[in-house]
Image (cartoon, helix red, strand yellow):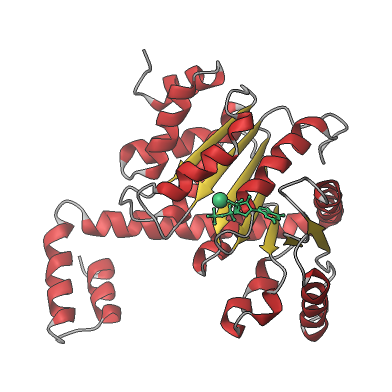
Length: 320
Ligand SMILES: Nc1nc2c(ncn2[C@@H]2O[C@H](COP(=O)(O)OP(=O)(O)OP(=O)(O)O)[C@@H](O)[C@H]2O)c(=O)[nH]1
Ligand SMILES: [Mg+2]
């Protein structure tokens, strides 16, 4: 029997109950009291180490994640010479809010690890909560940390805001590209430098990897000089080539951050989380209970052109 109160669920999950863990994560996917109760419970445990993997559909993120799970359980971790004790993977596909076939595919590709009790793989969907995935992802990460997963890998299909949100949750963000990326339209390239700590050119068994590397180097040369220049790693996830180099690059970035850069990043992340939680709480408070009617009225007024979102928000927030 699994409990329903977050405290009991957390205790059960720590003892190894997958059903309890799954339910806790379902709570943070949703909204309301249970989400809040779960979140406030797990944020008192230290956060896990988080690696974000983002990139276009089919770039090889899941195949690479599968390799990274193995590396994490075998190689020295970044934190000490021992490997990570337990690894969780969170798959996020913002374009399919209600778990679609792609996510089942991810499970399939990582099935080598499906029966390993040190590994947990979970797809995240939004169940209509106001903060959406931008709250569910960091909260799920903290649930996993509280349950004893020392490394969490977040796989996201790179589309706009989600990349940025994942980057703000991760200690290291890996952007996965493929040979031929240089031909991509400019809008697809925008923002990539902002989020990437490490670049991976996966499917390096295909022609064009060297050209993609030159394109990336040129793009970085044109950008601002930064204390950390993202390294570029070639991988063939399907046969494991380059995965050791990627693991080494992740370690380098961790050591760079340990040299002080992580304090600033942590502060930025905390601010980002606080802003998102405040926004979601405010919005929920305004829209629920008595507020629902006033909210609907303002919405009608916007649609009728009698007001605009700014005046409406001001009325809802400050004129009670
Ligand atoms: N040739 C080659 N194929 C690869 C490589 N890595 C992955 N693939 C193949 O590329 C396809 C997509 O790989 P996935 O790992 O599912 O890619 P993904 O980025 O997770 O895809 P989505 O989650 O759907 O966005 C699969 O058929 C893999 O076998 C590689 O290094 N070389
Ligand atoms: Mg995938």
